[in-house]
Length: 373
Image (cartoon, rainbow, N blue to C red; front, side, top):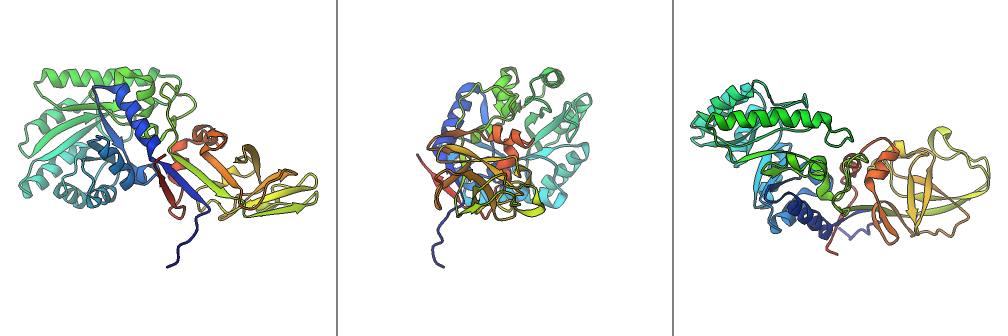
């Protein structure tokens, strides 16, 4: 197959990834860092990201799906992998055979893991998820102690960690986070008083790492912060994170149009005067949401230009007026550019979403180009 030139790409700056990891590790020390690389490392490429972090000393990783864990294991990643969330019985058996850490999220999981581990003649190393107010999965915090006691007496099970997840760590008002923290701390105190020794307690996600040092315990779970983005515009920017992904394309065509011409599907935009429209070979199939229609902007030669008309599957249109924009000029959506950094958090806020969704949405047809700058 011939080598195909790449015009629409996601550049992944591994030097920035390592710097973000260093900053987080320095901030939370002596706590361990469990790198969250689920969802293909938030769209950045889980295998490359995982191996890069492992080479820098990362020992613990977290994913959401068994398929994600197996991809990493089969790639040769050197590290311990925790599976978030619930597993079906057949998944649980495979996960244990491959040495993954299982999360116990409900009382029924206890019997199931014990049964499978017994059949495999092994000790299953588990983490127990406690629901302190997220309302998703986990043992309810006010009744979790008895279940944890049960797990601690099972020879087939070893509790490696106990964790919870915050519902509002990325919001300006942290009052509910403090309620969750208090519940978690009460449970941990009761566990210790019961004589149960657990190697790791973890709660802090990216928002808590930035703003809540009291939530570090002895392990933290950075996700979006590893990739150089702040969770929302409400969290502080207390670490100078560097964006790891830069999404860019090039101008494919420049068209001069008179006033009154409709642009794209639905006639949602009309030229107000004679103007030039740049056509870019990128669309919602690549991860640029339709909600950017008549709302988003791209940077070309250091200047922001509006996306006009409806974002289509493979192309978008940008109004450039009378400016000297030519075919082949680079167009940037977020990340590092020759003229400065475009914050994905700020870009996401324009359409009412978060940087997580932008990065995860960049589809597989957009090549990832890995750089060590």
